[in-house]
Structure formats: C-alpha cells, structure tokens
Image (cartoon, rainbow, N blue to C red; front, side, top):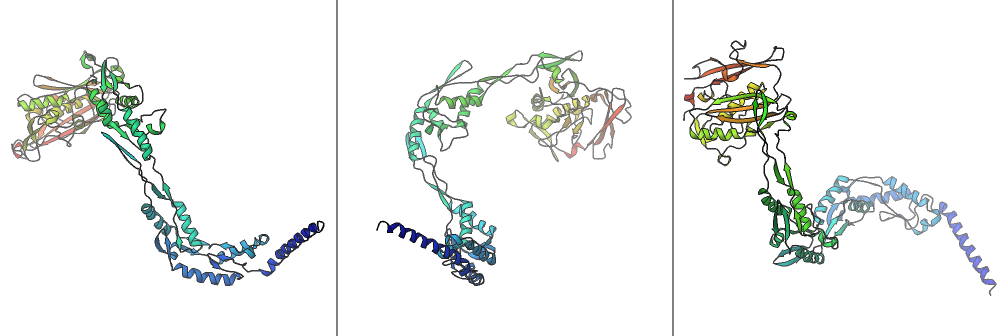
Length: 564
C-alpha cells in the first residue's frame, strides 16, 4: 500500500494538469466571441452572450436605468441626467478583451464583472455634491471653558465632513454599474479640544492668573493684579494668533489659554500715555539769509506696546516679571540734520494783515496757523492745505465765526481760516512753487488786500494745493506779530528769480506778491463792488530768461449777494 500511494498521487496530479490544459485549449473554441459563465456588465447577466446580443441586452437595461430614479446621499435624481454619453459598443468590446486576457485563470468559467464606459456630466454631479457638502458637513464643536467665579465646561460635539473628490468617485462608480442607491463619502470630524482636556486647561489657566505680574518701566513698578489677569484670560481650541502663554512641562494644555491681546493693549496703552512724550522739532530762524536753530529740538520717547504685550503674555507662564521697553524718538528737524534735509535758508515768506478781526476770528486764525507750525513737506510732494489742517470743529479748538457759503455769510466753526490759507498761498507764490489748486473768495474781503491774492478753503473742498518741486524738504513755521500772520518756508531756494505784476509784460514788477497792484476790470458788472482782479507771476531761470508766466484771475461777486 505504501508503494502505491505516490503513484496514485502522481496520477491524480497528472489528471488535473491534463484537465487544466484541455480547458485552456478549449476556451478559445467554446467561448469564441462569447462572454463566459456568470459574466456581468453593470449587473446585467451576459453569460454565453455574443457581442451583438450583449449590446442589445445592455442597451435595453441602460434605457430603463437612465429614466429611473437613483438615490444619492438620500436624495433622488434621474440617472440619465448625470451622464453626458455612453459608448455601449466600447463597453462590450473592452469587457470581451478583458475576458480574453483571462484564459489562464478560468475567468470564462468563474465569471467576471465589468463597468459601463461612460462620459459623465460633471456639472450635474457637482450640483449634487456641493449642496450636499453644505447639508451633510457639520463642523465639530470644541469643548468650551468659562471661568467666572466657578469653572463651567461645555462638552465637545463631534462633527462630520463630506469628502468631495471621494464622493464624486462614488457617484461615477455607482452609475457605471447602474446602482439604485449610491452613498456619499462622509467622514467624522473630531474636535480639537475635549471636555477632559478642557478641564486640564481650566485648572492650569486658573493657576497662572492667580498671582500678580510685576511690570517695570521708567523707574516705576506697576503691579498687574490677578483680577485683571483673570478678566483678560481667554481659552481657545486652537493656537491663537496672538502670543500664546506656553509651558514646556504642560504643552498639551498651555497652547489653549492666553491673554486677550486687545485688553492687554488697553492696559499697556493707558500706562504708556503717562510715559510717552512727543518729540519737538527745532525752531528755525534766518540770520543773514541762513537757517539757524532758534530753539533746540527735544527728543521724545514712546513705550513699545507690542513688546510689552509680548512680555506680559510670556510672564503668565514665566517669571511673573515684564519690563516696558521705552524707545527714544528723534524729532524730524534737528540741528544735526538741517543740511541733510536741505533746510539751509529761508526760501520765502508770506503774510497777511487781520487787523479789525473780531475776537473769535483772531482765535481761529491763531488755532489754524498752529496746525502748520512745524509741517515738513517732502521733495516732490503735492501738498494739501485741507489735509494738513485736519478736522475743524469745537473739539479741535475752533469758535464760531463768519463763513461764506453758497448764498449767504453765516457763523460756523473755523470762520477766519481763509486768513491762514491765503497767507500760505502767498508763501507758496513767493517760493515759486507750482500751484495745483486755488480758489478765490466769492466776494472781495478786505483782510486779503491786495485783491486777487487770496485763497479760500472749506472742508472737504475747495482746497489749496501746491507742489514742492525744489528737490529738497520744505519746513513750515508760522508766527504772529501784532495783527500780521506770517508763513515762513525754509529749505533750498530754486535758482533764478520771481517777480509779480498786474500785467503779462511784467511792467512795474515787484519781488513779493504782497506788493503787487493787480489789474482790476469788470467793475460793477456782477453787482455793486464786484470786479475781476488779475495778476501774473513771472519766473526766470538763472540766466534771466522767462520760463513761466503764471496768470491768476479772481472774479468777485457783489457782497450784497451774500447777506449776513
């Protein structure tokens, strides 16, 4: 018996091998242009069917499926609407070729499953997925901590998210096998902070704000009380954008609590206001045509608020000590940088006389002029009088006084500021600066003689604008001597010379616009005391050649049209 067993085993293996070889040899003959046993395309049984019969059977199955309703993510859709085209001939051909390649693994006998060759309607599928994303996706809710007398912890809530790409693949795969129910791909979303972690955060955070922080600055020691720290405490499920209070031995919780940056800023800013000091520019004057310092500059100082906030944040988990960093602020105009800025000489002066002005008007002239004292104009800058002046109301120090409006003259805050703008206009004219915008008053005002050399302003328009084309900085200082207002422009004079006259030929020209005699015409044409005033600014180069002949025209109405 023992000698027969190996022989039987060999004979059995030989039989099986012969059967396998016979089956392999018979497959091409028996299944020529036919699908194998239990072969299916999109769930349609095509066993032993040839290509033509298979296509007919598939066409009928697809026709039924295309008009049927398919459940996708719980919503019903017509299958055919989601397909752009289907190539049934290619589907059958590709499936047949796939089975032909399986001769050596008995796929003809064991059956194979194939999908349809489909071109999908991407727009239609996107219109399913995108709304489904909004409907099915729920953001996780982190556990929250409220520390107010006692600690209250709200548990976390799990979320979920629809995966767009994977869901689209599910839909296409389901349509390709004519499924009636297609699931979208939804994954769970776990919160960042759990209730257990939140409890640890609360315990550690409470400990960190239970002791004061010492703040050193300007020779004074400030104490940040635990009550303040407690009111600033914030707990977040993610690392906040502001500086986070960290602790090396407890990193899993210290990333979640920090101090409210806005509240810390308000605290620091309040302290800093008592330490900060504005820099004061040097006051200049001209001696023998040269600029010299009349009053030395004063350096300022400012507390680095950003650094202070950072230090206080870090002190929560550190040594409980923070230091205010105080930075020295240099003024713009100093004795050591006048030449660098080009402030080497008195470029021009403009003046007006406000004699006879009421008390409120004098006050407004003084207040308005102070806004320009120390203004520095950059090379090439288009200077706006209104922008430099800023808001005009009671809060900025002005009183009510007469102002010319559309059809009347009425009291308003800042009445009299045109005295300031007209003076600035004259300084710009005398400096030879290009005038970009200037408007005459509606009617002649005695404060601005000679007539035609005035400039009215009103916020936001009209404005007075000029350009600094000297190539150097211009520094403005204002002064009042008696009842005269002066604008002094310091900088570097342009080469050449400037003259003013009431005619284009420069007859009787003078060297300052305040000295001109303008040409008056159309007197009384627009009513009593109305007229037109004209003057010219003649600009010459270094060789004495006329380069510009600027004409300024002012058409004044009758004052009777603007009663007050």
